Length: 375
Image 1 (cartoon, rainbow, N blue to C red):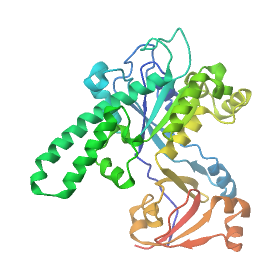
Image 2: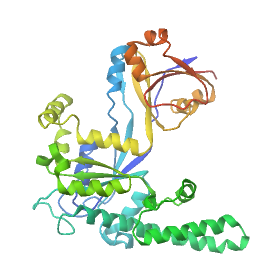
Image 3: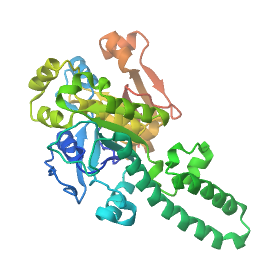
Image 4: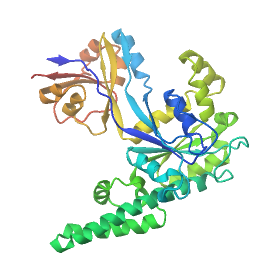
């Protein structure tokens, strides 16, 4: 029995964070068209706004042309607009405790950094300095983590009487972590081994979450944003921790979001851009979460499905329906590039490009898949 997919979307979330008035809510509005309030004063956003956005995937239209599909269904991801943090957030300043709790719920962080000068938009710290802004955010996240780590150490010491050597090893690891956090070094930059990182994940540390830096520039700088000295500083900082930087003009992106696809394409072309900053941000965030997509195609629909990298075929089928995973037999797979080169499913089959994969097959991004199952 072959099955064509019916969908389940991912629940993974990216939190948009930063100081007040750096363009977070403006960017969020552009991403989701959700109309989150954006104004020129701190703490405009108190409750986090959540929006679901489609992940751009040009492969869907090309598959639809081959299969003459009736509809295209891209995958989606969630963005959370979290209110601006300030110095002292970890101690409750500016409703900081509440905002930090919101960050703790997301899977990754997109930190918006102001890299534009505008006398009409106030800066909570009085001037433009992106590295200072990043340091403020990192320091507050470190301070919040310190509190949690200290509580974990205290609890561990109470259990030491049991003689469990694992508890002693955990305490020693946490004490090392405290030293880094005390120096405002995020846990993700502390150089722990993979085994140690696995132990730390149970703590749900703010500073262990993967981070993407979003440099927000002026409209007249977007075509050559790399020349912006503020962006250069952010890029150099991000390179030290192996993070990625996406450059956007949040104000411009909010205007593009109001255009239809054809108008937006012309507008971007006039700016000398091949794609919007938002598309790059969405794609980068998707990658940051360790996600990928496999594809299904037929006359009714072409669809992208979200899975975590490393997912095996039966579990990928389970994203469609639990019956597929439970009764998995084989996955019939052709890579997107092979299918495009062949020109059709039948031609790909004749050329030996369609494979039958078993339960141990690890799915690859762009696999065009039919699942065979029986329940």
